[in-house]
Length: 168
Image (cartoon, rainbow, N blue to C red; front, side):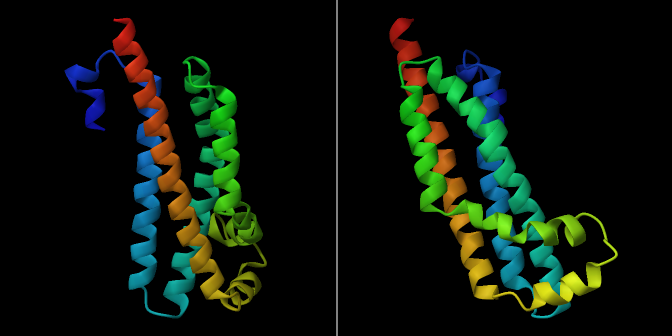
């Protein structure tokens, strides 16, 4: 967040700083959720924390695959870094970390995580029978994904900075 106020970065477009800041913030939020889940006692509190995690994962995945990807593509397209290269890296990141697995939990997010559906109790009971190891593995993969994404964003922006300083 301090990048917005630094005078030595005043020449960096605000949209570029926002893209990196959001990637970093989401990554930090994911790490925070891992810690919160680790500290939960097994039982109802743990299940409810996992539902919060699902909601955040779903929203984070949407940001990365929609807003974030659009921003990163635009930054890359405006510079010498080939947009196709960034597109390939993004596709590889999604595949490597299997972030599509998050969609498996969409019903829980939609019917318990954000509101209490008439089927909420049945869904909560069913959610309690899910493989918690698989869930935790998915969460850790997403944390690695968000880290790799933030690193890619930083790399693209640093390349932009190198090009900008050469042309100045």
